[in-house]
Image 1 (tube, one colour):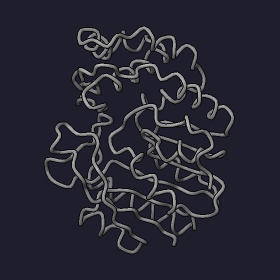
Image 2: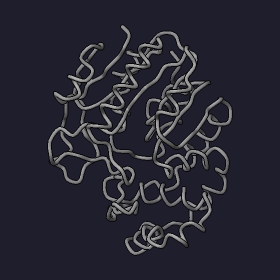
Image 3: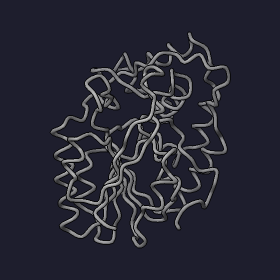
Image 4: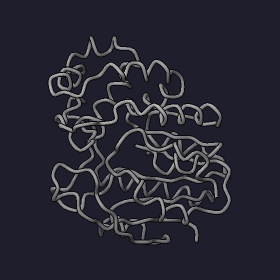
Length: 280
């Protein structure tokens, strides 16, 4: 297996839909042979960091998220020093959260400051939820945690070492651009924003846009193209009737997973997830 090389390496951000709890289910389902790992909706990167592939491409439409990974790779010392200056108190939290309300001044911030802000807010906001409003502004309230690990220096340095020792292409944009340029020996893991299990369960506010059923259909069509090209893929989503119907011709496994990020405790129960593969 291609995982477990550095046990310190783990997601630096808590992300809605993160796959850390499902690694023991997902890893045995990976194909035996592939040379390039591709994750177009990388999010918190739980599977990516567990596998630690030596040749990979990761992508996400959330530019701020991807900037965090780029800063960890290129400027980890400065990032750690900036993180040490943040304070775990309510007044300071809301001051930092407000930085993106002034677009002009926010644009003047360095990438290091922006990345540090995202990590700080993620560690100290309510339930570690990344969410933005229609204007693209971070809008999660203060979490009131006693001792959040704002500066996880060992993990940051381990990720930095890995990203600089392996050949990892990092991009921020539409997943389609990644899928169009894959080599034939690639393996693709797709973890898009999930189809809502109810009208009140929808959470796609990682960016200003969202992920509608039309987007889910568009993604399924690109999965069909991958299959026609002979490229192996695995996809995770909620096991709604709509998603099960979309991927009905593929190898489907239904698993139970606990929703760890939600606005209230009642929304963080177990849900049924689908794992789709175009291989055995």
